[in-house]
Length: 330
Image (cartoon, rainbow, N blue to C red; front, side):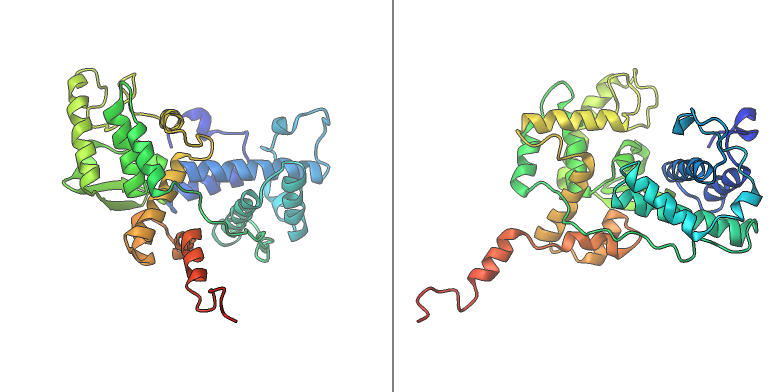
């Protein structure tokens, strides 16, 4: 995080929140995306708190305009478990937050109040200790079938064919996150080994198969033709402006090729291609759950277990193999 004098002397945020965000970055080593998420959640919580506690002088203010810089430690000490549940109710009824979004806010509140009680020593009792998270119903991941994946690769065309084909190949074979793919530098690749920085700034090794290596080599040949125009020579995937491709650019690119392949461009995002890679590895590659966990960079194996679902064809075959399945069992 880059600071200037204005950001260091930030009077728009409570000091407790500034201290917490600094702690997440310098001590816990959280990524900027994670820190941003915590900031958004806690900003919403503080704005709700001022309304809920009747601390708004100007009731004509829009929610996003409610100032929170004046929230001090004395107010933090008065927060109760009931206040936290009231906030979660508010996010569901008035912000239309999904179960997943509310569960994330619970995690944010727990982390923040734990910091206030055990690290900053701002509060004596942690109101979030007994805060329960809403139950998230587990659903099978959305993914492309093997045939659909092949169709998508065949549909790749256009001026940036080699680049786009390489990107989609890496998604489908390696299970990369969108942020991981966009941040790849050429220096991260050594033979068949790709090093990426995943969630929480954790380094992960990704092994490249023959399809990935061939796609990379084909793209690098084309990329070298414009080497003089490239701003940062180490960046792997280059946009039309000769700079690192943004996440949004990759999303738009994928959507175009999904349409060409006559696949649902709204349903299948870069993250769904990550699901596809994981599912295909588990289904066809006989990859065990622990290995898949390492490949995907999941901190907990419970996250990886969503890929152990059995597809409908296997379920249908299992029923057919039942010895009582024949009709002439009279």
